Amino acid sequence: MRIGLFIPCYIDQFYPRVGMATVELLEHFDVETEFPEGQTCCGQPMANTGLAEQTRPLAHQFLKVFRGCEYVVCPSGSCTSMVRNHYDDYLTGCDGFEELKAKTFELTEFLVDVLKVGPISGSFPHQVGLHQSCHGLRELRLGSCSERVSESFNKSRSLLEALDGISFSELSRPDECCGFGGTFAVAEEAVSCMMGLDRVHDHERAGTEVLTANDMSCLMHMSGLIRRQRKPIRVLHIAELLIEAMAGSEVVS
Image 1 (tube, rainbow, N blue to C red):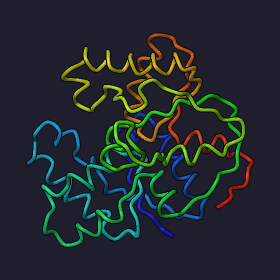
Image 2 (cartoon, one colour):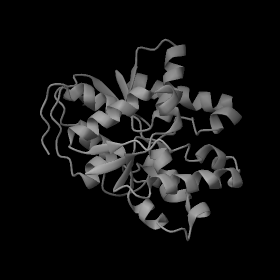
Image 3 (tube, helix red, strand yellow):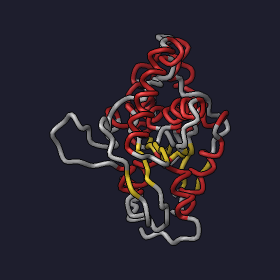
Image 4 (cartoon, rainbow, N blue to C red):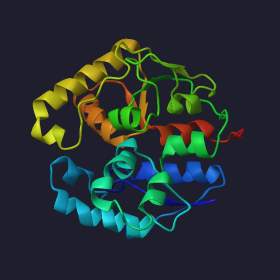
């Protein structure tokens, strides 16, 4: 299988190690990755601030760059949701758009739903706090929402829970937003920081040693607050956590 790797701007610029961990993880499952160098920002920051005409050419560039890929995989629920749920305003009626939406997946979603990855062998003897990003939870349905009466599931946790020694924090508010919200963190800095501090405090109260998520944007926000307050919580994208845990281990599919 050959996939097009869609890397968000903040990962490309600030956390390239997450991109490399994503490649290593996919290749571990015999997926050949290609990074189309013509890719740009997906346009989400512009779209969120109402700049439709500035977003449109980025959406068209995305379609041009990725339309020939068998699948498109992204280590971010937020940017994946932009393509799947918000590109209709810019690309409806364009040749190949519906196919593009159908084959664009967030990383954990791709592993669970497309590759059908089973229990992953590895060791991670730490208490892990799993943050569920708003876009991944409510727009991509990567997990069940606590406020809805339905069968409980979480695609990220299903990839982690077979690791030897791992335990999970029980949060008082498991679905709460971290406060980042992209441009919201700039426009409403004080509110954003208070929301982030509340989220970090919940993890701290629950005994989280390692904070993980499938959106580096949320982790970027909380990591900054953790560093400034000198809290002893390590922050890892789920791809990084899995690679660290699987080091030297076989994977059962």
